[in-house]
Figure 1 (cartoon, rainbow, N blue to C red):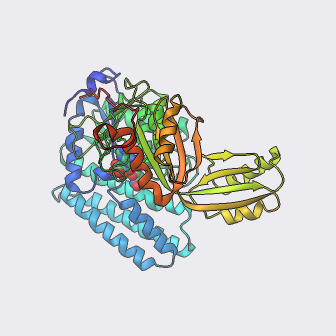
Figure 2: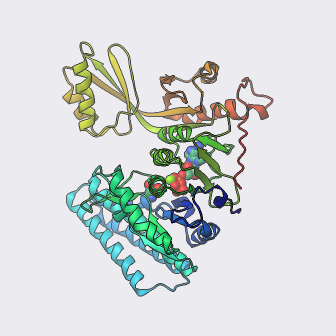
Figure 3: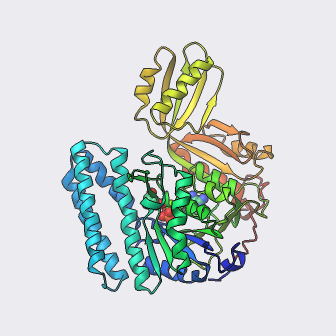
Length: 488
Ligand code: ADP
Ligand code: ASP
Ligand code: MG
């Protein structure tokens, strides 16, 4: 791996600002071996004053969530058994990462964390529900545990590392399960907790995903939130760059789990990456780009399993003019049709939005015609109550198991032939809520969930592969993306 970060860093070497914020996702932290790789990667960046952000170990958040749901359903013994399994795994990774030289204090701390987890599950069982507040407390412990273990592994490897408590540094509102930082407090706290450590020559290590309200109640930034943490930290400390270390070669033309021949996108603009994340690409948390973009800190997405790779560079103005950068699909979407009984007076529209907001639905996607409004949501839980509240004013119907497919790329809108190519390629598939033109950078539409893979594969073939497929029936206007990817 090259040491090119310094050349690109906007800070002099003696600056206390970090040259790089490095985030390691669960997919790059499966076990002790993966942690060793992460240490090697950080080691290569040492002279650039890194700050390290870590997620929970792979799959831990899902397992904690399942345990919480089981406890809520009255199956506490099942939940506790899962926790025992998690404790064993964390103990093993800790021992393996430190050649069994675990300090009694750390061992006691990890035991205490698991004791706390058992108490949370007990509270969930007593309440008979996994409230958003309890969920945040439960899930966040995955990151607390991982950061303690990775910290111990770093120290064992001889890295001068300091553990920074994210619950003291990232101060958020109380929107449990999808909290937003209180920017001023967070920036101040992050600077206060990390800059002195950098000055002492230490590597601050902080858990991703979690924060706390100003009263100290644990919160989380939403699933996949460690990317967001990295960006929050990078922006607050005005880092030279932010690196998202994960299990794929960068941002790819689509999710490789949908399309095995997805290719690396060398460069993207902040806006393109933000759109891609917003439209459901798991590779980045939906809000992860905004803080970096505000401070113009470049973001790199890199593969921890092959660190010599070039990755994807996300900057304000990438050199690459390629039209379509990537295709994304978000499953589990429900389309809600709200039809006015009489007509859509402005007061009715206001009432509709207020009802949805009261039930905690963010209305990110909507389309309207004269007498009806279509909205996209990802949970149907409160829809019966909403339908009841709007009774007499509007009829509310919904259809679940939809997927939102989106093509992202600068200037997509300015090429109308792209839309016609999309519709021709998917002419036998029922498309709904087609949105073209609301943004310069994307075309999106809804398909039945069962058609997701097929739709994405056809579009991927159309826009990224036909050049190599002489039998393709579809004419291609899109050149293959050929970014420079010259950072290493
Ligand atoms: P981490 O644990 O490192 O945060 P995630 O599982 O959250 O990793 O994100 C990485 C995954 O994102 C990849 O394994 C891949 O399946 C998925 N993904 C979805 N869309 C894309 C895309 N356009 N490019 C690359 N990966 C994508
Ligand atoms: N561990 C958390 C999750 O699985 C946060 C993250 O991975 O970024 O959602
Ligand atoms: Mg992630």
